[in-house]
Image (cartoon, rainbow, N blue to C red; front, top):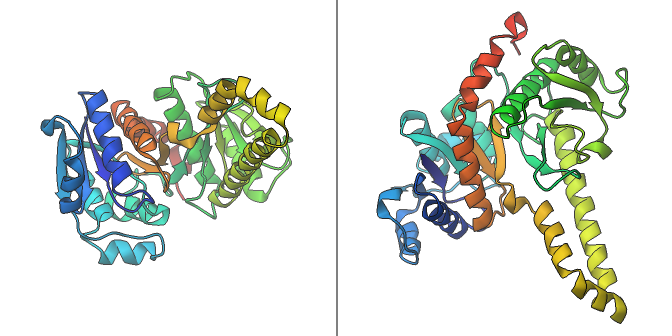
Length: 341
């Protein structure tokens, strides 16, 4: 399976992207990669590693789209940027299965529409991360959307519920994914006009196991598999959760150093703390799937390490191998006349 890796745009580019890609091909002989970006720099970095040259290609692209640029303008004007070249390759080369990029979120989402195109019937692609839950180290929850669409219509949230259900069922093996709408209360009448109307639409879908509303405090509870919301609310919920986790970790670290006894106690709990950090570390989760794009795209975190890039490549393989896009298209056929923006 051939995965395109956009080697530029992230905080640790191109080194994390290259090392993560090499780790992936060395650990899985069924994976090959196309490294897109400044070929001279990429080839120089590749000299540090041992790998099967049949599994690695380099495609030159001299320009880079930064997070400070206006996405639409950048996609139109920087035709030789690593992201645009990577998207063009994904669009036109059927031998390529998916794309991984840790570049500008806005640029990736814009390129997914302008260069790749949307799944017919999906009006808005969504940015969809997998997050940890309190239940087990293996269980995940999917937040759809976490920032692609600041304003949504009820039909968009219905699409998000459908796409999230397909992903959970086909990639994660959950036969009947539990779906909820993010709201300010569990009661059906709670929420905004958007969430109330979305509640009604999703509830009436026979192929979606709808659990009603989910309060933000239950985001990581493990009660739900797919939580749908508009990108504005989802982004706030996600960043508030990140802030809370960072606060807890810093507080624990401060308290450990506050006395000799707590420092000694922490030595015995070192393995426990390591496991906690691993469980909530985004590097082990891969990236956010751009659900709704007509080819598989994984948006890795901007500060991704090589571990996160490697995980994102495996995630991209899973999305492609399980034909998530084809199965989303099948599910859309059941929406009938409601399948409009």
